[in-house]
Length: 395
Image (cartoon, rainbow, N blue to C red):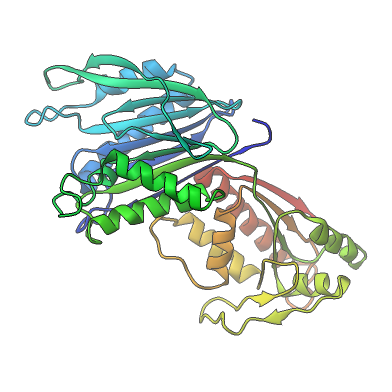
């Protein structure tokens, strides 16, 4: 869509006293280029609610990936969900966001707070069609009401989905006796974007969840989840690691670095040294960045981050593979590199293929294989877990 990139991200905090959230936010990219996100809220909280929400989100994602029409998917899920016999409520609610490659967006909502569509700072109100369906298994009375809507996304648009942990935040307090509400959450989103027009989906989701937590006096009375879709000009990141196969190509690597338009990272002492030498720059170790497990980062003009190589990249890969949205940020070189990657849309890796004579026998290029494999692990985690676009080239 006119060169725009769809950034998808979410943030989540569990109900106080629960070890696992009862809300689930899942996103997948289908073979035809569509992106599907599902926010599901299991009845109650904790592990049982999380299982029900996960089941719902997984059913939706797999059905949509199988190219089943969205309306039929919603009908299938509704008829599959059990209903609480006492409260006459389905055991999970859901919101489905289906984005076609050309920017056509379809949304199906069931019992979650209405989504927010923000365009050029204005809250839009898409036309919604109601679809009434039987309330699934369990003999519940009355029909369930699904709301279907669609629109063509434009560059700069944001869609914000959240669970009722957001709208009910602060309920029972003097300031918010009935909860924060839809209007309160919507106004907060609009204010955040007005203050920072380039605010990323990740930071918007985190800010909304944190504000809802504040309304609950930092003791959430329910799971609080927010997912954000943001159509924006892609933010690019270059990660260079390892020297090129021959010294004659050092200048080529330096040219790639200096001409790249976007943020830049050098991972590896040898890599940083050769780029600095070719560009007549200096590398200085940042003594403020000390960590007992990860070597410190360095500073160099033109680079957003300079790190050690294999150890730091391996830690980044491990962090991605165990990633949780509410995990604290690690204040070391690996944590900073992970944050840069998450705040970027297109990540380009340039992997040098020279054997480091100081570490390895040239006949046993173990270090080279480790570097390649670690980069592939990071790229796979970025693509599958965060729907980023990655490119790997070897030099």
